[in-house]
Image (cartoon, rainbow, N blue to C red; front, side):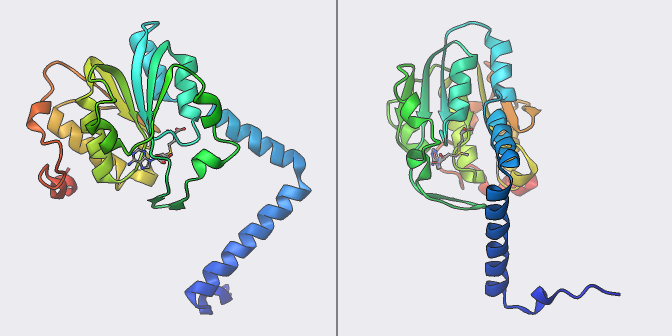
Length: 245
Ligand SMILES: C[S@@+](CC[C@H](N)C(=O)[O-])C[C@H]1O[C@@H](n2cnc3c(N)ncnc32)[C@H](O)[C@@H]1O
């Protein structure tokens, strides 16, 4: 017998509302009734947050113990910044993040990163190796705050195709030859945004990215064709061409 789902007869607004309410009730019940499971989930989440990403492990292999100056676009809760500081011989890490509300395909993020008790900002801002640049990435690169001889940049800010593309090109222009430009979320969730930007940069620079999900990275060579790429205006830089790649 065909399963009859009454939800189909409800208007969208009510259906979504009841789904949210059910999810909240189930989550709250689980949270209260299963403290052990709750602890396990929190431990598991912390374990993932505190595991160095493939990009970081690659930097370790590529640079060894060399003192490094790098940047991360998108600080978030600061876990990746902390991992970079712990895993590598970082002399200086520029963390670029406006820390203000922004919109993603998963919803509106309020400026929660600064205020949440879980954010590592209060702790990390005391680390003298960390230089916090509280600007959007475009503004940060346009200012004179970011040096042009960085060893690496990790792009994990605003995940639109246009912004990831701009962030990658700006990063290439701020990294020395032999340096590494990479980023996060080369995944299915971002196949319409991060992936096309990475492929476009690859096609334009002639560099082949290494993909180790959820990360990707390029090593900047002396002969990559950066000078051919217009930097400021995304649409002039072939925004429409993205679908072709
Ligand atoms: C996914 S979180 C970063 C997570 C962090 N990299 C980590 O792995 O721990 C994305 C961050 O990008 C920041 N962001 C949004 N728009 C930005 C922009 N235009 N420039 C720089 N950062 C931006 C947000 O404030 C947010 O903190």
